[in-house]
Image 1 (cartoon, rainbow, N blue to C red):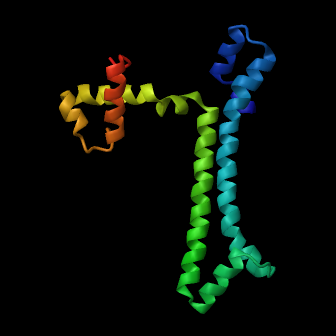
Image 2 (tube, rainbow, N blue to C red):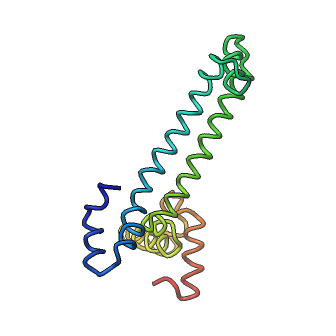
Length: 161
């Protein structure tokens, strides 16, 4: 938080005449939450990995003990089940953190919005000098099928240039 208070965007907000509370809560605190969100996500990953050690040391019944016992017994289905469960939980946590990023940072939100997709598709088309048909037929992951379909749908409505 202290690092963000001295950033240029906070000084700019103060120069524009925002109240001190608005400057701190809307600008400095919101950008500080990005770091907290990242650290929280990495802490959850460490907690899931530490569950194996803590549960086996203190004999707490749980996924960690099941995984350690499966490893000592060389029980492959249980090993795979525990690893897939931990991996799935980790992926869910990372998705939640990405959603939190989008809620906190408007730059991330605008990157995935509909009009932003259309601008990127148009820029890709101009850069590679593609016709409308070539753009629609691209198997490239930069311009996926739903993107070109949405592009043409918005273009028919008059939303795309």
